[in-house]
Length: 147
Image 1 (cartoon, rainbow, N blue to C red):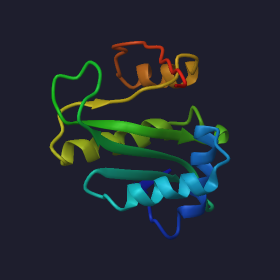
Image 2: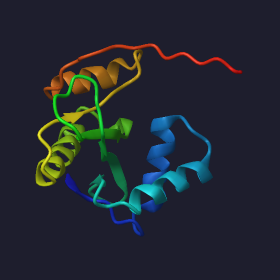
Image 3: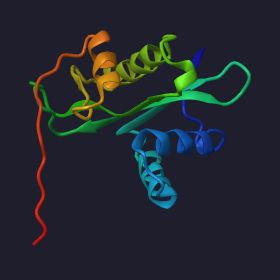
Image 4: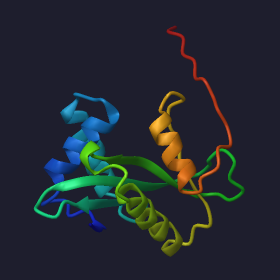
């Protein structure tokens, strides 16, 4: 399994496919807009992909920078913004390799901590984070009220 930096031209369709799957989103235009913003700021974002042996991609990870992350003692901090592995490639080390690439990117950019998040009910993501040495630091429920 080869993990490498995203090639924005060659990988765009596969990256979009996986982002739509990860975020449960059908807003293609919105996703493409967000992807363009990520690509426009390479000093603040890294996107890594895992190649399938016979073509196509099996996963991706996006790492960015945030001014603050719960539980961190440094600022700014590297942050796993999105992490997806196709179902047929899970439990084969692909996610681990993607996270390792994101962590290496963060170290190379001078960061000493990396953070992430997941939904409270995403037990697969929770297990993956814990297996890779991430520590749960907080749980929260967010609220909204229309005015």
